[in-house]
Amino acid sequence: MATLSGFAAALTATDLQPPPGLAGPAGRRFAVYRNNVAVGLIGALEARFPAVRALVGEEFFRAMARDFTLSHPPASPVLMVYGDALPDFIAAFPPAADLPYLADVARIEAARTRAYHAADAPRLGPAAFAGIDPTAVAGLRLDLNPAVELVAAAHPACTIFRMALGLEPAGPIDPWLPQHTLVDRPAHDVTVRLLPPGAHAFLAALGAGAPLGAAAAGAADPRFDPAAALAELIGSGLACRIHLPETHDDDA
Amino acid sequence: MTQQLPCGAGVGFKPEHFAAIAADAPPLAFFEVHAENFMGEGGRPHAQLARLRETYALSIHGVGLSIGGEGPLDRAHLARLKVLIDRYAPESFSEHLAWSSHGGAFFNDLLPLPYTPATLARVADHIGEVQDRLGRRMLLENPSTYVRFEESSIGEVEFLRELVRRTGCGLLLDVNNVFVCATNHGTDARAYLADFPFEAVGEIHLGGHDADVDDAGAPLLIDAHGSPVADPVWTLFGEVIARAGPRPSLIEWDNDVPDWPVLRAEAERAAAILARAGAARAA
Image (tube, rainbow over all chains, first blue to last red; front, side, top):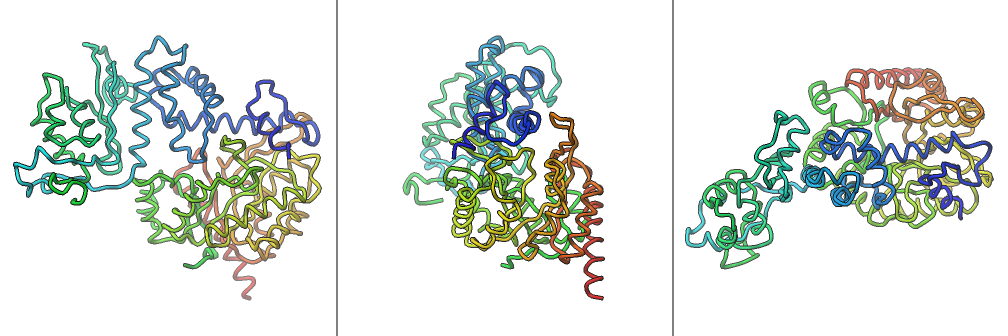
């Protein structure tokens, strides 16, 4: 029963030797499997992280991805979620230390795939909020749509991501400020856009279960515009369920 | 639910073809998808698959269950397959005589196993568990292999036949894999096919391969699914169909995916061979 263990170990071994127990001279033959495994897993990461790849170049990306596949092999055959751990890996990857924004760009890309495959859910627009007693609004709790993800970054990661993929013209980024990003999937296509100051804290608090009033009051940024944030929340349909204050979790 | 694909030609569905397929409404017998690509919860993949399913028969083809693996089957993955199969009620579910996970790591490739009494018992147990859990018969596909194991004591066809006997599973005959293996191991594809238990075959696969050489300079074919079906594979397919009668037959083209008309033309070539054989048998 040791046959497959030896085979598995040799797939990623650095000595490039085929495992024992194979018939005939099997070097090049076994290398097909070794190559399939490496190319397949690295390719899955290349497909999921195109902006990171564009920022560091193909050679750097593949070498980094190779290291990642060896230290973090996928635990599941569902490769669409492979690489959730890549952003943290990048943050601790010494050769990428002079690109401190790279991990945050990877966080945006990881969120983008999760959003693409997230469960379908209602997107509550103005009509869903129209009948609510105005005095109850501050006490509303909302579930955010499963496709909504928030990425807080110490660098202008949203702009860098968009420039790397040609979604906006590349150029100098000035001023170089922290950026908070909203990843969403209004229909089937994922959107990645910059949130205004304070909106990230507001949406994150809502997502964590805070009532609307408390979430707005808790947004510490002095530039936070609660009316604009509410318009974004409702206009973009970021919520999928409303919990009225009197009945907590029972009413939709 | 009919647990049998219609006896015509189909293609592997690629999302980039969705709009062309919707506009073209091709007269194909079925589409096939890789199960693992539809294990997200929602969004475009499921919207497209649900739409295709309204019009076409469906084959769900797993590439990650690791039925040939040494360890127990991944129960979480089996549960995901169950959800997918309950949702789409496909006419066919198939997987491979191969392994892809070991020691908790997934390798994303269809890896070979030795054919011995012990591995036969293990694979039969795994197939039995899959069929019990999914509540249906599955098809098992013959693999492309690049190496052989010294300890193998059972021929591949005999191994497959015995799995059918022990588990009641059906077989997915990949004619390209037969040709690739025969070339790589210096064996005779026609002898392999002459012995194959066609009565168990619920589907046929046709795909393209790449050519390389091994350490001794001998031809080494790679099951790459990135090119048209090769002429010798078409010839073998014609012989199989002439002998066994028409079977649901699929064109696999997973890499360097061509424009829709190119893939459709490959399926039409298969459909013409199926139709000729059907007419000849009816005459």
